[in-house]
Image (cartoon, rainbow, N blue to C red; front, top):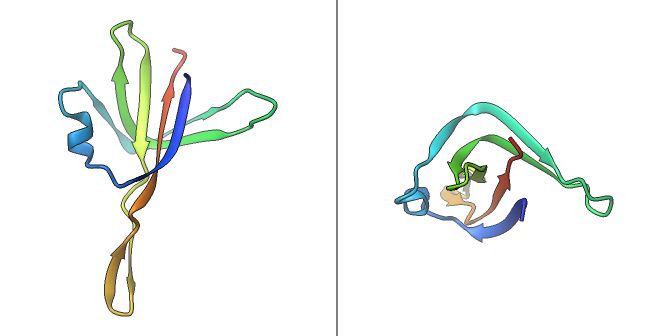
Amino acid sequence: MKHFRVKVMTMDHQLLINGIEVVERDRSLRRSYTHPSRKLMDQFKFKGGSDIRSISGKRATFQQDPKLTWVYRGEVRERRVRSFQMVVWDD
């Protein structure tokens, strides 16, 4: 699998990366991957993200949508379902 995107309940990032060597990228770093299939022209866009490497040296980036809050009738609310995406890069 080269790419993966799913809607999930908010995950604890620290729990997700526990025990994994991760390079956290600044949100100013912009990267994208476009799926090459004619049936699916889907683009994965990253603002920053978390980079990991496999034992073979392949690099992958994963990212969960940032926290989003708003005030509704004086009550602070938070989006509980976010997109999680991951791409394995060809470098």
